[in-house]
Image 1 (tube, rainbow, N blue to C red):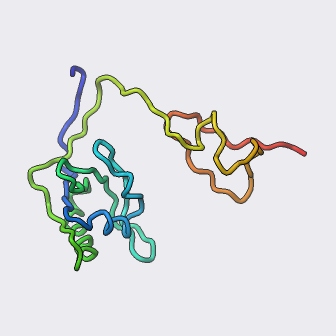
Image 2 (spheres, rainbow, N blue to C red; image 1 turned 60 degrees about the horizontal axis):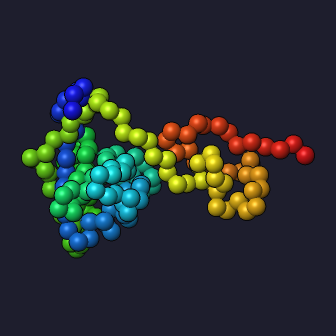
Image 3 (tube, rainbow, N blue to C red; image 1 turned 135 degrees about the horizontal axis):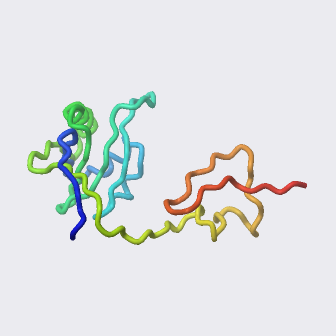
Length: 160
């Protein structure tokens, strides 16, 4: 492909988690749904303290052998690995550094066609819990961000 540009980011590194219980271990300790990690699909997540304070953030990617690869900041990689090892005790899960892999940032080339998520943020479909096309509630709700590619607009209200 022509037009691609990029570089190897030396400030990022890769950790590897392998074992039968890896997904269960991570599902219980990170901020995103591990079930969404699939081949070709990365998931952004964070590790928090039990009180909810931020410790680390990273990207999770499924490796070719089924292990989970963790793209994290190089300066905090050992601390993250040590923290994850605490959660792996008595479980079939192991955390190791992946010396043979690096993180490359690449851009340019053709843009893949956007594919909207089948979710209620679609402007052409109402959320499943809104029966009969009723007006969405406007107070006391936190409105999730719309799917990428959709315009952002606040919910409409009707005056009575």
